[in-house]
Image 1 (tube, helix red, strand yellow):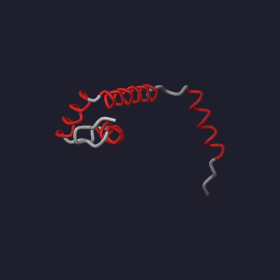
Image 2: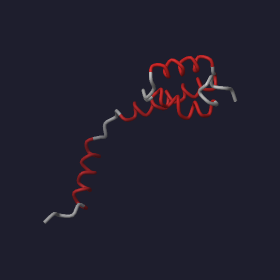
Image 3: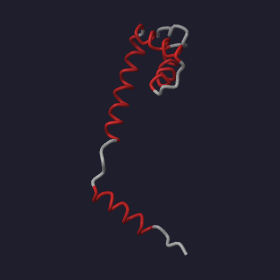
Image 4: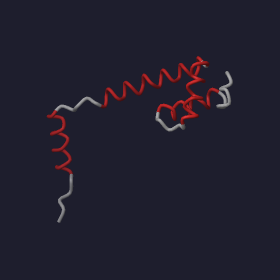
Length: 86
């Protein structure tokens, strides 16, 4: 396991700093540090690439609209089991 240039060991960097970087939760200084680290650390760079791929797939999947008949079926079911308010 390589040292993450002041960022802790690579497991810590992957588990926290890379996710914070992808979430836009780092300061400008931290962004520069993590970019430099990703350029020099194949392990963390691979983790970063994988996380980008996963996020891209999830984002793409979340943009698909449910078929209208499915939405109507779900709403009908909700209304059928929802208690009538007095």
